[in-house]
Image 1 (cartoon, rainbow, N blue to C red):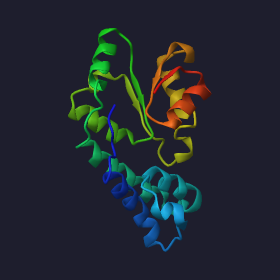
Image 2 (cartoon, one colour; image 1 turned 120 degrees about the vertical axis):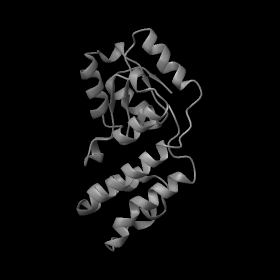
Image 3 (tube, rainbow, N blue to C red; image 1 turned 135 degrees about the vertical axis):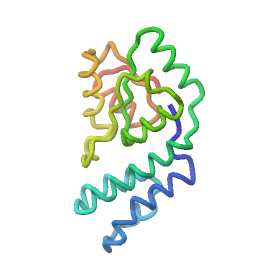
Image 4 (cartoon, rainbow, N blue to C red; image 1 turned 90 degrees about the horizontal axis):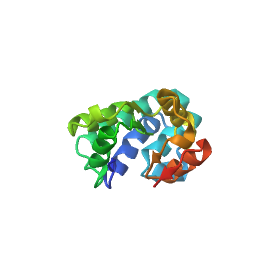
Amino acid sequence: MFSLFPAPANLEAANAARAPLLARGIDLGDHISTTSDHLAVLRWAATNAPQALAEVEALCDDAETTAASTAEPTHGAHDLLRKCHQASKPVVIVSNSAEVAIRAYLERWSLAHYVVAVIGRPSHRPDLMKPNTYTVDQALRLLSAEPRRAIFVGDSVSDVEVSRAVGVPCIG
């Protein structure tokens, strides 16, 4: 629906996520020290520094919410939400971003009423982020929908992977 972290915001979010780990003197290794993916830092913290996970996640949430206040929509995405609503096709947003950030974006653009639910990144459980099927399974249960009767619109490899794992057709 929108690009939350165009450069350099992506690197700023990753740096913010790294900060509590570095403050604790935790060796991040080459990949996590240089990645511009704040979610990679979050996943790494869950496995390698669980004592810092809550703080890292809070900083990721803050960075995502800040980014949502300036994110520009993907061409046609808002129109798609409106048309789904007009056709009585329910929309559930499933994201690896924090629910609060997604809701901030929807409110900013007056789109919240077009969306039945928002299922963001599971709190303190980055292992349940896509491509894990957890959030998509939640959406299907919420809608009482069979996978083959739903459509997943995604913008990443993990979106395609999760759609295939669940059996939901994917539009990339």
